[in-house]
Length: 415
Image (tube, one colour):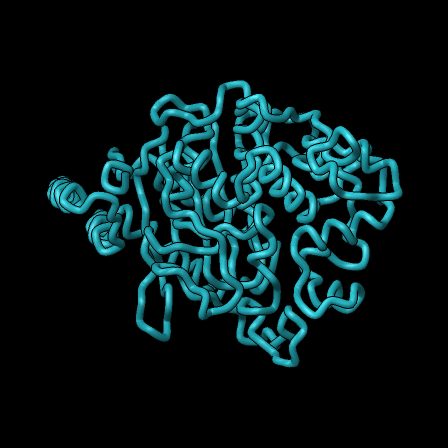
């Protein structure tokens, strides 16, 4: 075992030298060498076997795992295939769709604007004094919606009749459109309806609410949502490889995984109203239009680095203030969503999930300073309930292997 760690140190030194000679490069081959060397440690080989078995049981083509301890990246590895047909293995640097994990990124962007005194959590979203004051509506309850309501899914929006962000064909038909609606068109038409409940009096998970937050970021910053996030949020965290997703396989980014569905998943009509049928994960929905609600793509390593910049631990400098982090993670009660996260326990365990066709993602930040991130490139046959099984996997692996993970910081190689 001691010999394996010695070899690991040699690989780390060679890898750092390679990175320093090629600034800005983070080749997946270097990361593969690191994790392969780690796998020679018997305890980690058994952990890898457990992850491989998990993928086989859930019929997943590939997944990427990143583990941090006290803001140090101690483990990063890809399992299975990034592109099975092309023979490309999944690596720790492989980019993947992050689905609703995107909401956590958007919430951090909002908190950055709060810190810069460009808005507050109590800023009204609509109405004469609202951030998005150009929109018209008949229901005065829209004037009650605040930024915080949107962050907590308390804006008064429902998914009765279907989630509008996943109903592009229906919206095109109802609104007489020949092209998929823009975010502004979606907002204009949905504001013709009455709110489903008084804002702040209840909560219904709302992708549309996070689309509105994306528009708030644009209006207040004077930049596109994507540019603001890259320049004012990700860059400050040292992250340079987040991108907004494309809808079709031809839109795959360099280094992005291919996505898969289960064998019994039937083709669906293409989202933009054409006659074609498509694989659900490639054209079944307008993923790019989700914007801050679900469109980001990134590696688990990049995501780990971002979490390290908003977790309040001292080892990596946070981009958000102590107060902002507290506001994002403060637990009100079981019935109230935190800001950006999907659940925050009193003892300090934070959770963020993400899931749609071809993708499942889970982030767990634990009170002992560990953070575990797993993102898959395949729909699970238990759908949204799959995240509970991933959380159970984390619990089992932490109990068996946390004390045996290497004591190092792989961020030195990536960043």
